[in-house]
Length: 168
Image (cartoon, rainbow, N blue to C red; front, side):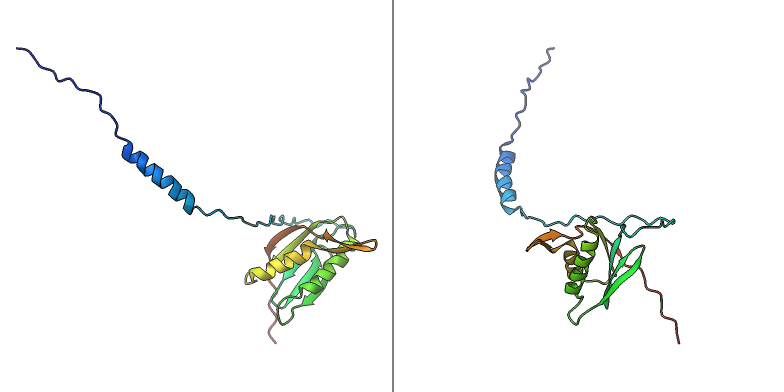
């Protein structure tokens, strides 16, 4: 007896529906995509301090600004506190900070690094205002006043905890 075999033809892929989907989906996704420009401030975290503190000359400055709720504390990491600027009723006194930073820059013109240490509950706006006051300012060059960089390389970190006040 003869065996009949069915001839099978190759199946064709029906991709028309898929192409229609892509034709509709690609313009929709492109039209709903959000293209934004982000402003980013490049910051670095301060290096861990070593146990051995080397003696530094007056030419070595490690500027540190501690942002506290009641004041701004400007200090040299090795030399200690330079000045404590009390806060005003509206917040930190960034104008006084800026004036002090300009005076420090005239004494140390080659230094570019500064560290801003903030308490955990410091508002973001306050932190940005302090960083702006440290980063750039106006310096006199001859008879003209030009915009210049003060301490543009800013590192940020957490403010050290204050020692608890002894009970009376």
